[in-house]
Amino acid sequence: MKAKQKQNGVKSEDAAQYSTSHNHIEDDKTIALAIAIIERRMSKPEFFVTSPDTAADYLKLKLANLEHEVFAMLMLDNRHGVIAYSELFRGTIDGASVHPREVVKECLKHNAAAVVLAHNHPSGNSDPSVADQKITARLKDALALIEVRVLDHMVIGLDVTSFAEKGLI
Image (cartoon, rainbow, N blue to C red; front, side, top):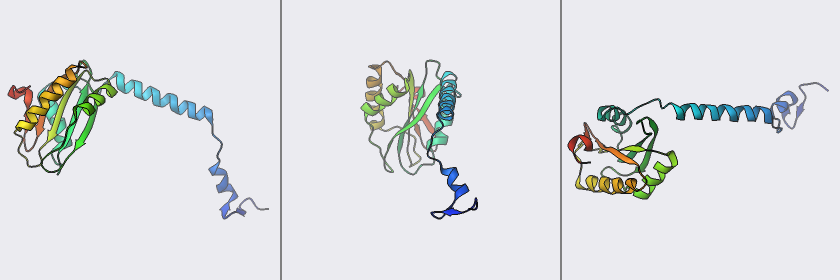
C-alpha cells in the first residue's frame, strides 16, 4: 500500500494529524504558562486611574460612539490600578436598567477595592439625570457594605460629566 492511500476519504498522512490522544506534558506546560500570565497581569496593573481626566479619556473611547446606553465599571485595586473593565448592562437609546446586586457581584468577582462607574448618553448630552443621581447613591450604599469605594460616576456624551468634579458623589 502507498503512504498516501485514502482511508474513508482522508489521506493516511492527514489522518495522523487528527490524533485523539492527549499529550499531558504539553497541556501542563500550557496551563503553567497561562497561570504565569494571569499572575503577572494581576500583580502589575497596566493602567492606573490617577485623575478624573485619566478615567474620562479611557471611558470616552469605550462608550462615546455607542448607539445604545451601556452601564460600565472600572474596577480598581487599592492603588487605583485597573483590575478590569466590565460592561454590565445594556439598554436602549435613552436608558438602561442597573441592578445593584449584579454590580456588587462583579466587584466581588474581581476583588475590587474601588470603582469608577460610567454610562453613556447616546443623545450626546452628558448632564446627569435625577435617575442617574439616585442609582449612584444606591450603588454607593450597596458597595459600602462590602468596603468598595465609589470614586466617581461618569456620564459620557459629547463631553464627560464627572460626579466627583460636580460634587455629586
